[in-house]
Length: 254
Figure (spheres, helix red, strand yellow):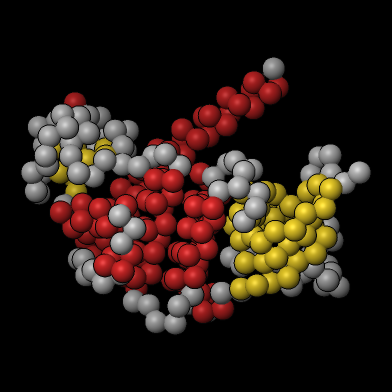
C-alpha cells in the first residue's frame, strides 16, 4: 500500500519524462532532497500544472510507491514574481538551484539547507536590489552551503603553516579548503591569488552577517575574482561528491 505525504518544497530542477510526464527535484522542508513524478502534468488540462514550478515554493502532496514518489496535489505558496521578472536575478536563482542540486544528495530533513535556500530566494525577490547585492546573495548562499555540508574554508590563517596572513600576499586553495600565505603557496598545489576584499567578504559570509555584506562596495575586478574562486571550490567539491556517488552506486551494483 502506497504511503501519502504532505510537505512544503522548493523546486530546484525539472526534467521532462515520456510524452506528458515531468520529474521534479524538490528541496523539501520535511524530507530533504526528493524526486517526484508528475504524471501527465505537461498536459494543458492538468490540474497540477500551475501548482508546482521551477524556482517556486509549493505545498505538495505525494504518494510513496515501491520505486518512486508520485505527485498527487500541489498548491503554489510563492512564485517569486519579482525575481522572475528580472533576468539577472533569475540567472542567479538558477545558479543557486544548480549548486543545491549538485551538492545536496541526502533524502534527509535538513532545516539549515532548506532555510538557506528559501532565504536566498526571498532576498532575490525583494523589490529594490543593486546588481552587486544580487551577486552577493549568490555568494552568501554557496559559501554557507559549503559550510553546512562540512566544507567550511579556513579564512583566518594559512591552511598549510597555520600562521597569520600577510595582507595582499594571500592565495585561495580549493584542494586545501582555505587561504594560503605567500611562503607556502609553492607547495600547496593549485592556488589563485586573491586580495583583502575577498578575505573580508568571505569572513562576513561565514559569520552570516548579510546586513553588512549587502552594504559593501567592492571593485568589479574583486567581484570577478570572488566568482572565480567560488566556482573553483564548487567544482572541486562537486568532483569529490560525484566520485563518492559513483563509488556508492558501484557498491550497490556489486
